[in-house]
Image (cartoon, rainbow, N blue to C red):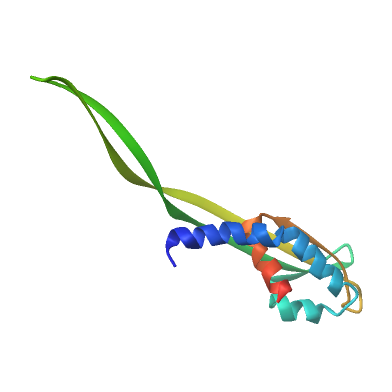
Length: 138
């Protein structure tokens, strides 16, 4: 599969399947009231465990920064003067641009004193949150 096809699938697949945040919410609702171990089995180990104001939560965080090459097609039109008068010509050129991206997602799962899932909060963009939506869907 070429780079262009991979990029198209990366962009279109989440759109066809739905919003990453909605998918995360749907699957987290299924896990609500269950032991945090069930979420860890799907998401992997969390990046941190935090207690704030007596409320404990686990944090999964993902960030991906990079760039991809995108072709840019351009047609140039030129005219020239010669012994036969004005002549017109055109030619095409292809240049490549580096398009940067910065994907980030944080998923916080709040638990009660028995380590049962009480609530969750997800923040970030589709590019990174899709990873957690995909893991929860498996």
